[in-house]
Image (cartoon, rainbow, N blue to C red):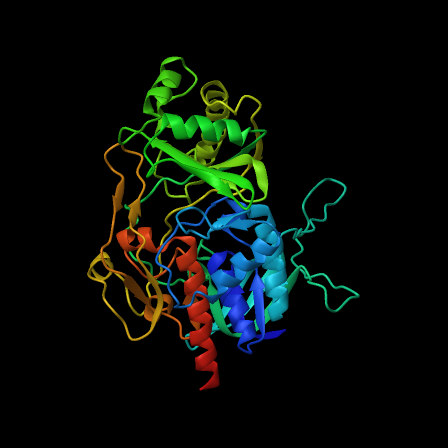
Length: 448
């Protein structure tokens, strides 16, 4: 089968790239390893989206997405003007319908097996079902005779076989794990010593938000830390507490620690938000992993996931004791995916730097404009960094174009930039803009 463009990864950047590729006339295939779109929004429960400058540059997909979610009852614009308060479950439905409107072909539960390269072009991809099975015949003595890697056939020619080849003119790696870049042996920026701890988020339900709103607004007078109001006839609020500075909630967390309800690691990062269309629930932007690890270290990653789920029980029991309105709270959803903040980044035609960001450097072909701060999480008390920027900054298209292959591009958290600039660029609105801007650029290339 032949496509003009194949987008690998159905997260924020991938969805925007696939939508506009199809809308601009390219035959588009979107490949996603999970059974839903949305990436960190839906799989890692990363809601709400962080707020940045309201830019007209490549912001159309974000507007389409939030408007569609609003029509489903899954989006609000918060008190500070942030329209990124979204329902992660309804987001799956919204993204399905948006991409269907554009005519994007989508393959769920699909993995990349191999890529085929000629003269610095990626010519085709070999894909397979996530349920691929190797048939291993045995003899009567239980000796393995052979391992079958033959592809299966289907009477329905439109169905995906266990292994299939997709030809393409262009490839966008929006996977977040750089699956195409790694299989193609692309060069990567060598700063793997710089890491940030990931998070494993969860949702708690059964909460009397009216009771908690009354308590938290009285208890915490800092409106930079705690806000609450009624929006679209729903109570919405946010509050936080971290170990690197004194918050209004710090004495309560210290009591929980002293009583043995919490471990010291549970105090590292606590933040909760309400969710549109879920009137008795809150989303926890925690627990954060206790260590900054390379997520390719499977032993360390697995241990951190187990520890995070234990932390969830401690946090919900703490909230039930100390937060009025949480008496009947329970864990209703645990994110199936880890919220990863930083990944290895491939080398592009331009490596964007923190100096570019701070100086507000302008470019001939920018894909986004933002003012989101430099936001580095740390597993050390004095290691976190949240630094405001005082100029709007741009990201050039060249940071999304592979320096190694002529038809390979990337978008999302893994682009050609240094560690500190990536910490500001990784937010959801910016990733949407990257995907949209990249699709527009490739559509222009294809018309030349």
